[in-house]
Amino acid sequence: MIKLTSYQLSKLKKSLLFLGIVCLSFKFYAQPTNRILFIFDDSYSMYAPWNSNIKIEVAKKIMGEFLDSLKSIPNLELALRCYGHQTFIKPTRDCKDTKLEVPFNVASKSAPLIKQRIQKLEPLGTTPIAYSLGESAADFTPCNNCRNIIILITDGIEECDGVPCEVSAALQKKGIFLRPFVIGVGLDVKFVDVFGCMGKFYDVSNEANFKDVLNLVLTEAISQTTVQVDLLDILKKPTETDVNMTFYDSNTKQIKYNYLHTLNHRGNPDTLVLSPNITYDLMIHTIPPIEKKNIKIQQGKHNVIPVDAPQGYLKLELEGALSKYFPTTVIRKKGEMNTLNIQDFGKTEKYIVGKYDLEILTLPRIKLNDVEIQQSTTNTIKVATSGNAYITKGGTGYGSIFVDDGKKVTWVCNLNTSLQNEIIYLQPGNYKLEFRYENAKQTTNTIERKFTISSAVTTNIKIN
Image (tube, rainbow, N blue to C red; front, side):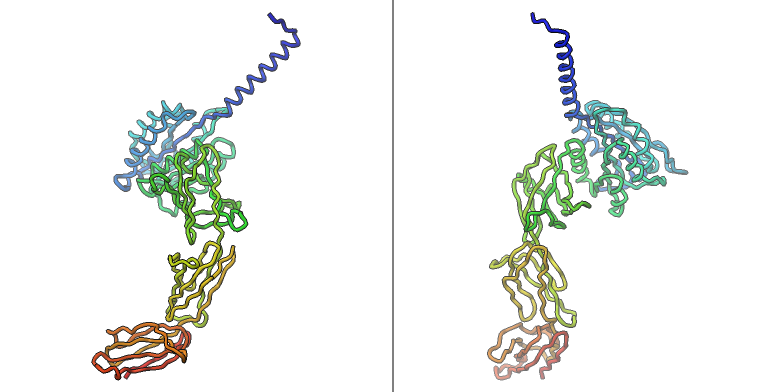
């Protein structure tokens, strides 16, 4: 037996106490309890038809399936608060119609209770969102290691003169809950900004994506798995933005997410929430598009996906007075025949840095090769505004227009055989028109007219 002095005993007790605190602290902080309070809209407007049924029935069905999937998730507690479900909306609105229906408990016990309560709901009243948020503060009982989360599911905006954004901000500031998630069920898009200041807003535009949105919110709420896509410029800095991007499931090739890339108010790529259980192929819809395959997302971490996407601008302008005719341009990558884009004059488009071949669809065609696009700069291409040839015929017949440069004639276009009068838009220059009436059966009956076209000017050509 080893005997310890009182000093050694004291030291050992302190060490064991410290070790215990460290172990408890590690366990305590490594696995926080996620507490999700569902605030569920049961106001009278939930009777409105939506997709396959009325809103409340669709919500009951999808929420029931969603709650079933939560029962086995560890470190998760759930609760349910409803509003608009106790007092009929007429003759007066009850702006205090909100109640905690199912208090917090572990998901395995609370999920079935919440499902049962939701199934019994009948829409009755109004929409006191601000008041419900304020009352929810008491729903989150004291907890030293909890992440308090609100998921508000609503089909309408505040109807009781409350200010949900102010209430939400005040409770977040006090640390009552994290920034809420707001799921709009069949809401008008004009209400997006109304909820944007209150929390992170998700628009459920149809029944099909309701469950997907719920799963997405859950992923962000409890796993803290986030993603940002860095669209890198020529200096490898994430400054490129405002381009659509599509995430595909690498295995099924199905579209999982489709977003328009943006930079947040700090100038950084905005944060997304993607399911970490899928391997993705990412398509960046630049011109030409950029693809990145087999992207794996690490759960519980902030993932950065870098993509080289340096871009510049191509601007097409007409010189001279404008007419009714605006030509368009076929854009191809240098030396390739595949059409990347059709760009109209008067428009500016972004392209990946590099060289391109342009075919401007004027008459005659204008071909420009090796047009260079440089990082964050604009290459402006100007062509003269077309003039128009107003051709008057004495009858129908066969004819063509040629460029006449004094040395050779180059075909431009054929005339319409069924028209006696037609307008053809041509680039400024000298031309010849060769024409023979349909009933004139001798080659020597060919009629020739020389004419000159000026920008935005009508030139009359008569064929007797």
